[in-house]
Each structure stands twice: as C-alpha cells, then as structure tokens.
Length: 591
Image (tube, rainbow, N blue to C red; front, side, top):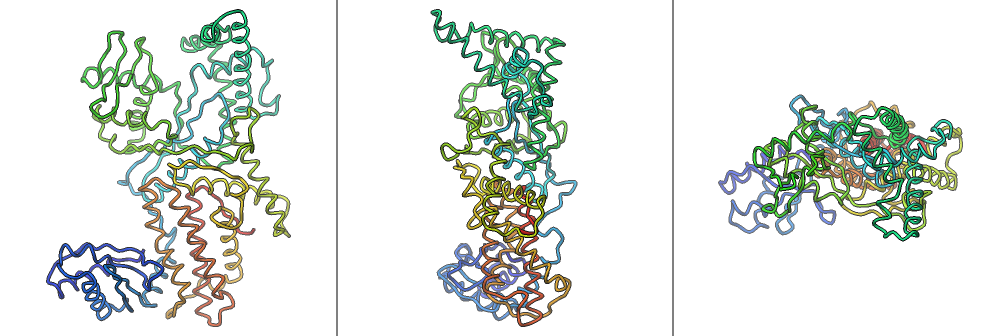
C-alpha cells in the first residue's frame, strides 16, 4: 500500500477547511480494478463526523486534494468511495524509495521485540516422518520465518515423543527378530529401520492374538494376554525403573531415528533451535499440578486422581494426574510450556498441531491462564487440516501412510519428467539438472501445501502441483528465472537513475503490488498464514508477466524506460525470492 501518512494530513486539513471538523483516522484500500484510481478513501466511515451525502463529501475532498496536493492527479467518486489517481512523479518517488531498501519489506527484530516460540514436527521415535508431518513442518517453519520477518524474535522447537509403550514395541521387536541389524548393515535410514520393527511387532502381536482367540479366548482377553504385549509392558516398567540394558537399547535405537529424521529435515529445509524430549518433560508438570491443587485450581477425586472442572467455561472436567500419580499428556504440556518460558523468556507460543487436537489446546491454554500465567494470553494453536492423496497414488510399503522421503523422491522424479518433456535444459550439467529437479519438485510440494489456508483439508495432487502454468511453485520459479535472464542482459542499467518518467499502466500495477509487500508480511504474521504470502506472490508474478508480455524491457525505445523496467524486474525478483524464502522454497537462477 502507498504511504498514506502525508495523504491523511491533507485530508484532515480538507475537512477542517470545508466542514470545520477535526478527523485524524482514515480508512484506505486498494482501488478496485474496474475503476480508475490507485488508492481509495472509504468515505462512509467519515459520515459519523459529517452529516452529508457521501458522494458530495467524496467530491469535496477529491477537489480539495487535486487542487492542493501535487501528488494527486485526478479523482472519481463511486457511491461512498473516493478513488484517487496519483501523479507519475509520486509513483517514481515511491518506486525509488522501495528499490533502494535492503531486504525490502522485512522488519529486523530489536531487543524489545516480542519473543515467540513456534513448535512443529514433534514426531514419535518409532516410525519415519509421513505426509502429515510434511504439512506440519512446512507450516510451522514458514510461520516462524514470517513472524521473524514481521519483526519478532523467534525460536523454533519440537517436542519429541521418545518414551512410552509404542517405543518399547519397536525395541522389543528388534531385540527378538533383529539379529543385530543396524542402519549401516541394512543400508537403511535409521527411522525406517526402527519403523519396520514397529510394523513387525504389530504383525507378530496380531498373530499371537489370533492364536489365543483360536484357543477360545475373547477378543479383549486375547489382546491383553498376548505374550508380546506383556513383554513390551515389562520393558516399559524396566525403562521407568532405570534398567541399564533397556536404557542402552533405547538410546541406541532412538539415535538411529534422530539420524534418520535429520536427513529428512535437511532435505525438507527445516530446522530447530532446541529439541525438547518427552522423557525429560513428562514429569515436569507434576509439581505445578501440586501447587495448583493447593491454590484450588485443581481438585482431587476419591481415587486420588487430580482434575480441573471447566464446565463453567463450556468445556468439561479434565484429568491432570492419574490416581497412581503418573502424568498424562496434559500434565506434560503444562510443564513443558512453563519450562520453555523459563528457558527463553518468551511471551508467546505457537503450537503447530492437527485439528484433531483443537479441544486439547483449548483446555491447556485455559489451565495455564487459571494458574495465573500472564503469557498464557499469547498462546496460539496453529490448527491445520489433513492432507489426502488421490486414491492409489504413492502408497507406502504398509499401504496406509505416505512416507515423507518417498514423497520427496516422487516429487523430484515428477519434476524431472516434466522438465525433460519441455526440453529447456540444454547446456545444463547432470549435477545442475539434478539440483534443479530437486528445487522444482520440492518447491512444487511446498507451495501446493502452503498456498492453502492452514485450516482447510488438502487433496494433494503431485502432478498438478508441478504444472508450469497456474497457481503453482514451478510457475513462480520459472518467472523468477526469466527475471534473472533479463538482469544478466541488462546488468549495466541497474546502477543508473531516472529523474523523470511517464508510466505505463502495466508498470504502475506491478509497483502497486510491490508496495503491498510489507503489509502482506504483517498480515500473514498476524493470521499465522503462509497462504497469504504464497497467494500474494502468485498475484505479483501474474502482474509481472502481464507487464513483461505487453511492454518491451531491454528493447524499449527510450533509455529511461530500459533503466526503470530492468530495475522494476530486479525488485520483483527480489520480492519473489524473499517471499519464497519465507515459505522455505528455493528459486533457481535458470530453468
């Protein structure tokens, strides 16, 4: 949006002179495309100060501005909207101001900036990352980057679910059936190796249940009596008791998983400032619950379990401590939140977790508020919908879950096929081609997921996402590469200046879009929505391509046209790169 401060002061002066009222706040919006104009003043909002016809009021303000403000060339009034047209000199000054800025649109955080922690990923250590984790990671990472770009101090974290019966199942299966297999001996990523033994446990356990049922036991009893489950429970008890052998096995297999996760995270382009582990945090909240019990926030039932009653808040009663004194997930989350505030002095947190946990986070936030933590007012659940695939496509070995690594491989292969079919990679080395396939494939995946409002469910179509036309990552990447080609040819024009210029409408359209970049970042941060950045970028690219197809750049007749248009291309490319960086997407200099 244009800098409206100077305009607000002029409109205020107009109202004082014409109507003898003092008004300081005005509502502006972009002018609708079907009307002439660059910026629109909403006149309706002024009628509470001035009792008159909105059209007449608009006409009066417009006439005053045209007469007294050099930057206003013309105006028109549509009902209660005053559409203002700015001068070429104003457009040139606005463009020069933003073209000269380093990292235009981004706000550097200061010492007093809000400190926000963003949690995402948070996997279990008994299986590899899957398609659901991909959306989670992409959302969490991008929101963290957007919050940082909006001027906040940001810390990225995850809570790794590294303990419990599900972890022991993988450990027991490996102990019984693994024959010493390791990631290096099997040439398999550690998370996939451990995940395979989790599946193996389930297969063997079901076989035992069926045997017991054949001997006359009921379903429930057979599941409880299966020897393998009993052994897994015994292993969990040994872990909690600190058994050295069990702990050594647990540490070894978990490390295999962490090494595997790290490869996936690196390829996906996400990272963390600190990892929290459930094995460290599952007892953290117990002391807080004890304190809350003394304050009357919680109450104890006859069996010794501790609860909170939230019925007055429209929720229900929630357990925070079992009768045997053991922690539940809620206890852990209470303690972890407090620990994080103590570790980083943060005053806000964003939890990137699927929408099936909406209720859990309502309860968690409410409990923390009732415990008296002021920062609990600044907790946000970034709730997102599931990701579905067209049936029958890219199923993993288990047939139910899409493995994250397999999906990235598939995306890269799809990008390779489409790129080769288009035949535009002549002169590229094999390594350059492979890097480009990865950039396009992962860019397509990330953009397709992030362009959708987080709350909405996604049907992810891999081939559709790699289309070089339409609202896709590759379409934006291709435009960026085209701009780099222009800049290589017009490099000498980048350092020159233009003092006077008559703008084409297509040029103005791109500049107006570029002027909206800073407020787009702020809006995306406020709404925790990478979709706002993604769709802004697509609209900018569409406007630029319309300009590119209708106006000569390097072949323009006049020198000042060539200078300004190359610099306009340069700034557009810089904003595309900046926007895609916030989405975690790379841009290629050639395609």
